[in-house]
Image (cartoon, rainbow, N blue to C red):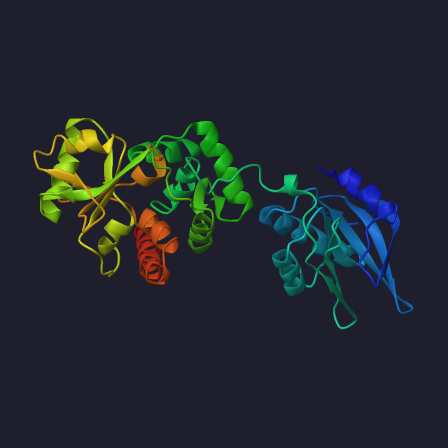
Amino acid sequence: MATEQDILDALTKGEVSLPPARLRVIARDRPLKGNAARGRIDAVIQAEWDRRVWKFAVDVKRLSTPKILRDALGFIRTAAEQSRLNPMLVVPFLSPENIEMLERVQVSGIDLCGNGILIVPRELLVVRTGNPNRFPQSAPIRNVYRGDSSLVARSFLVRPVYRAIGDIATAIRELSGNVSLATVSKVVKVLESDLIVAKDRGDIRLLQPDKLLDQLSANYRPPKAKARYVGKVALGEDELKRKLADAARTRERRFILTGADSTSNYAVLGREPVVAAYCDDPPDGLLSTLGAPAERTERFPNLDLTWTDDATVYFDPRPRADVPNASPVQAYLELMAGDARQRETAGQVREFILRTLSEIGTTR
């Protein structure tokens, strides 16, 4: 991983460029006048092009998470104004989205991969993008939007404000999950760096539910199945659901309808009369306790039962007539991974989630 010293050395050696402009470091570690929160800027860079010269106050960062960029922008804009220079950030990698953001706020930025933007209002605009990230280790330390750690992210879509890390861990347990305090703390730090949550007057508050849903959807993977039963059981749909739920409780196992099969609680969706569910018990063992004939067949089945230990599917169950239904978040993620009709219905579920969060916020 490139350190800030490595980046400064590369700048000084002329190893960072943004053609057709020529870049040259003319000062390093320059002190600032006034009462700035930090007393120095990392460097002053001179850009030359077509016999014109522009000078930039530079702040160097070894990571480029949204929070780091936001904080760096606040500093360098103030520092550049005090120094009567143009503001610039230098990081290992700038994504196209980062460059678009820098253009909106009129701040220059360059990386070690050949991407960047030089911008001086009404005078200069150079943009280069599309070069791959040669420093992938500078990304967040783990994918917090997938697997057990995603339960922390999902908990904010149930309750948008918490007083402390311990409250989040407690809420997750109450929602049928289990995540250690250390993991909760690490995940919250990443969510904070991604500007999805923020610490506000002692609270930990969800800022961008839309962005959180997008991240969960982009990183969603269907649960790994140990086994799957597709067939016919000689019971009606409602009775089959109820008896499966009762059998799971008797055997002290988890059982829940799939997100897709729970969608009618949150949106309008036509569906086949097939009970689709997850259990953490071998399907044959669960079926043996129903007291009704069962036959494996893919011809007009009425049951699709998946055996999985994936904690995400059992998180935040919503009981309906004593049958655990999947959470609206699980329904949304499954529908978004489906066909065009299901993705369209996912929009309704998304509206349900956001509307519910808004209503919770107005009652606090």
